[in-house]
Image 1 (tube, rainbow, N blue to C red):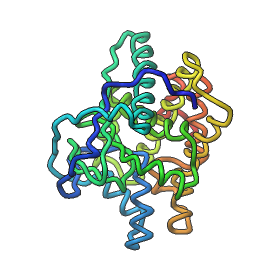
Image 2: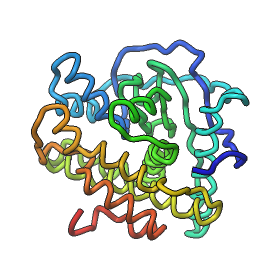
Image 3: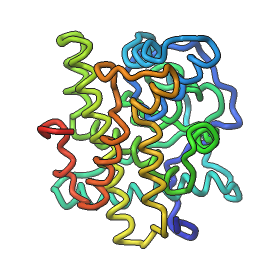
Length: 289
């Protein structure tokens, strides 16, 4: 992936030198591509059913927490530079797309942290993987997740990492468009299976929106190199619900899916990156996922 020398975002907060705090509790729904990582670790180390872990992360209660803005990453930090550049690229793409549709894009913040950190959705933990909190419109990322992505899930490459960030920014776009609120409004009004199905459509749409970013970023700045798209699709496949369940418990329970199968995640990311169309990402009205 070609990213060196491109603009860096000023919306990255670096809390890696700060001590986190607070217990584990969520006052607002945090939406993360890495929820499954906590599920795996819970199963491997504590024998907790991964589906139970995912369910807790999707709907637990707690008191919102806030944190004062942290400084930007050091200028000589390669990982900070990469994350800041990818975030800037998403800002450029989504600002243009919102303007073209007559709207105005509100840029999210991206918080780098280690271990635990307060958020408006409660205490974030690195074992959750990257997640987006609608309550403060921030993406939270412990960079150790990229090592997990490579070491434990076998997904490597900078564009695979950029896909992870773009997926969480996709959740921010959903929040701005009111999609997240509509889905969350159904919680408690429909069955758990039906809620899981809505969650799958929300996550697949975020995958598609990540692809939309990749399409326009490459069109404008030629960021993609040979093999980049395949690495991103491999990352999407490795974090499909079916792949995670087979890895963690040896069998698949489709009704419990919250993020979509490997094939579905690859399909919707591919739809976004091939078409560059937000309209093509309408997973909620799609007859087939």
